[in-house]
Image (cartoon, rainbow over all chains, first blue to last red; front, side):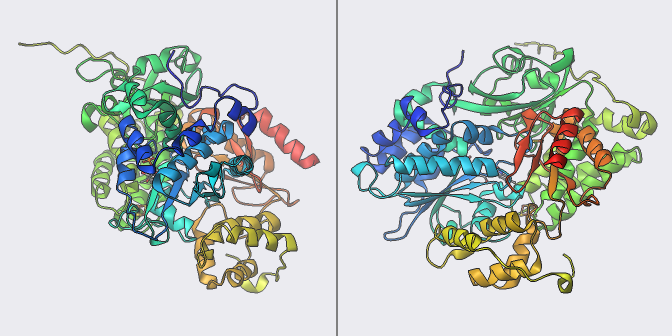
Length: 452
Length: 170
Ligand SMILES: Cc1cc2nc3c(=O)[nH]c(=O)nc-3n(C[C@H](O)[C@H](O)[C@H](O)COP(=O)(O)O)c2cc1C
Ligand code: SF4
Ligand code: FES
């Protein structure tokens, strides 16, 4: 059984309340951190090797050490709880069931950064979670872990929950800050980075819910202990949101480095593909990362097993690999239509583009229309290359990474499932009535010959 | 947006104004614009949607130009700029939920309520729409109902029928 650092007590009745959370050792990390200096706390997080759990995987300790600290100027910690990446539902899960894990992490992290006011930006649709967090904050304050002079340390902290308004783009950290300032969620041009000029133009750190919660075990056990879990530069545990055609979809905490095969098929995790079907494809890290056929999901092109780690999931680059992303693992069985799903994702990005840059605004709309006609039996063969062409013109030419996030799923679906797209053109009637099936995507990859 | 001339003036309740004051207190001096999104949620929860007169009143309260409120209200998908049914059924229509039957649920709701997406049933009780991923993909299909955003998971057609029935009887 893998170690659980975040979800260890998930099944304890009442763990969502302060009393039970405290009984189970909660808020020890705050007690410990407040006896250290802020820089020592930052140092432990650096030692842990923790990488941002929001999608980009940037080392958290390093991000913290970039924070500007001009004398007499307030700095802010903002937690990114906007979770809207299709396939990702771990943050909502954590906040629903163990809200104090986030509150405790916020106190530890705010202390490390010297923030005296911190915000948790929660997507507006999560009104029930907002109420849960507000209650948890009140409980923590009541117990002396928030407010003035926390535990007699002289450190003051106020923590507020801010609702969003329903916009995927507000998960992008600078759009999130704009939104928190009461504006439309248009991403800012960087630099300046938030570490220099963020919320209200002040130095700001934006971190994902899971990154912040992970600072609790890091402080409790020490950064070095944390870094021993996992594999290589993928240290610690990671929450994986598993969805799609699985026997047991849900949120799982894994030790990084677990094999993809074990994650998908073992009873401890997803329990295999639902209804006795075969696996056709996966999107391993949320809708923005490249889709992979079953064979490349389980193994590299050279036949070695693929692991759940930042490095292993991206092995092979975009030709034969994908990315860890936010850990949103979506499984497609043999009955699923790749063209339809690609169109669905394209529609999502076209809907969510903030519209500031023309390659993204126009390109996502165009891809959606072309995919719609392909899926509905009105496409041409040339549409397939047109899609590749449009996706290339978006990629790298926009203010924020949403453009890339929209381009990659389309480009990768065509890369690996071109015959299925062609079938939609050649057999328009059939493609409306039935599904292309599994073809050779699930065929195991032959072991590469070792030549000396 | 609806024509402004058609819109009634609004009054905010005392408890709503008290809530506004509490929200503004979360931000540093002079940064009360940050209160805009949470305040619009409160107004919508009380009034069911955001009329122009209601947005104008929020602008006056926060010391903003009206246009600053309109541009925010029109950017975000949660704010309704026209009246809705008493219960708005918002069903996730994004990829992972579609793998487990969301499209069937959407169709079933359309057939059961007998109105198209974003229209209101003649009795004023219901409207429905497809929304994007609600961060519950492993428990799909899902739907939510504001203003408290009550959440319903692992839906099938029977559960939807039951839900609609329960809301009708409420
Ligand atoms: C379009 C877009 C959407 C994003 N959505 C989220 C999100 O919902 N949650 C999140 O934590 N990070 C999201 N990110 C990443 C954030 O910009 C940022 O990198 C992250 O919050 C940093 O936290 P971390 O270092 O702890 O991962 C998104 C990025 C982009 C470009
Ligand atoms: S890439 Fe798209 S979402 Fe990002 S700033 Fe440009 S238009 Fe907006
Ligand atoms: S796709 Fe429906 S909740 Fe995520």
